[in-house]
Image 1 (spheres, one colour):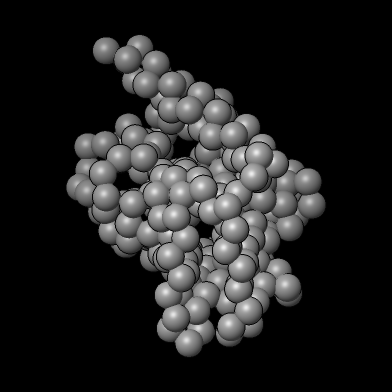
Image 2 (tube, helix red, strand yellow):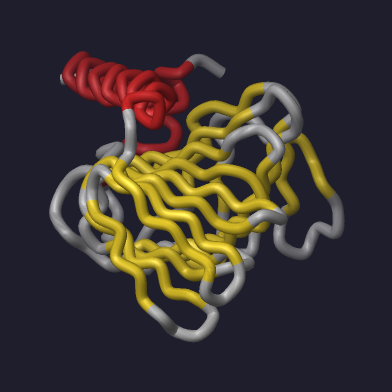
Length: 211
């Protein structure tokens, strides 16, 4: 299925519906990307054009990734990196559980319902999405904030605000490090955000062509 047919199939019908999201739309699934549908009892191949629902689980194997959109305007785009897994806990408000690996969130537009990501170490929450990345492993939780602010809520309910331009590492209940990001921290984010803007431009051009 071409990228433009995906746009038509997923987002044009949604634009005419109520604000309640239909699901999380998969824009691209590269490599070994799989989904565990709620109630299916098995993993199956995930491909572009799929709509993820509450209760679904997504995983990306080696050399794989999945890109998703939360809305028809592409104001919130998500990327699940290789070796990662997330669960869709709810759609409104958006809630995810990052079981392992790395998860990128790109957002624009007005403040809305807080987007929350649960991890084994803490809950990360933001209502002013600008852009951030999370990585969880056996060593702990890492957070990079590229825009806006993310609140990291630890196991003891301690809240650590991480502002734009900073990175945060949390291990256990009390071991934490907050540092200003350096140039290498932006490399992957810059390349991906450029791709996101290209997708948004493609979307706008395609919708204009329909009129």
